[in-house]
Length: 106
Image (cartoon, rainbow, N blue to C red; front, side):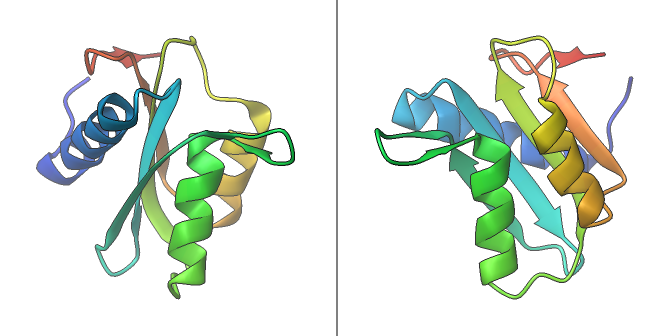
């Protein structure tokens, strides 16, 4: 699969955020205006959120009305049903899942 430059950018952002924080997951989303938000998973005793959920929450709390695309970088094979649902809810055309090296899965 060949991605356009904007979709490649969110995968790169997700990879960089994951690596910088040493996290299990990294995610990035692009909103309807082209702004991007990147995040890692949160795993606290009192709060557990996936990287996609955090990135979406950041976008929405910054005023995003919809998403164009989302990317998840993980050692796992697929995005969770919850990640897919939250991305769909905001109208994203794609949720790209990639390994830590940036290779797309699925």
